[in-house]
Image 1 (cartoon, rainbow, N blue to C red):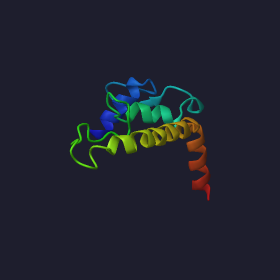
Image 2: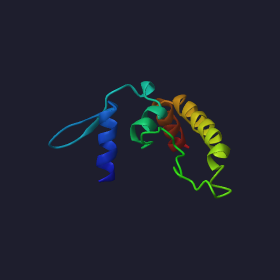
Image 3: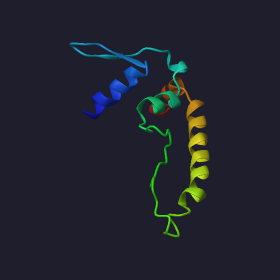
Image 4: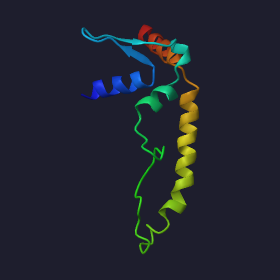
Length: 106
């Protein structure tokens, strides 16, 4: 079930094609044209907010921690997410495959 869901997400993102009947999956773009960010965005469920770090939508305003948690963390977590996404965007699947092949030769 998990694999089918991921394949469906990758197909919807137009990164793969899935053959009906006997099955079979193909990557439809050149590996150099697919970044880890493309894959991440296709399969990661960020929800409507687009935030990786989404937590406690309605903290208790009377709680000393809850009243300030979003003021303290939201911008920091957004910067972390943007940095991670920038890094993912700089790595292609071609690079990942080349690194894997290199490691397997050792």
